[in-house]
Image (cartoon, one colour):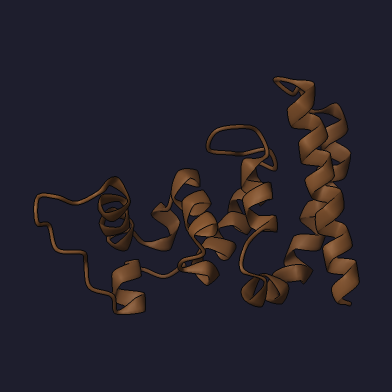
Length: 138
């Protein structure tokens, strides 16, 4: 883990506070002041969706999924879905680290206590698609 903030790592400037900042700009400035280990599931999910700081977001998502396969910002399994849709240019470099997570996810999803069947179905579909994506790149 780096002890530097994202602003220091990427040498970015903060968005100036002109009193009219939008929530995304406020979030961006807040994230820029965080170190990688302080990024939340919400931060990482948004970074993956926005396709910004992809290397850091992918690294952190993998760590988070190792701790909790079903973590998500708004629903169970959302982080896995966001990771699946991450920028492929960087994601493919981590396939060896992701493969065991997916195998674990397949097994644990079947016995996990889901809040609804739709989440379970969507999660298993994402895991299956992720496995196919990796196999097709090999």
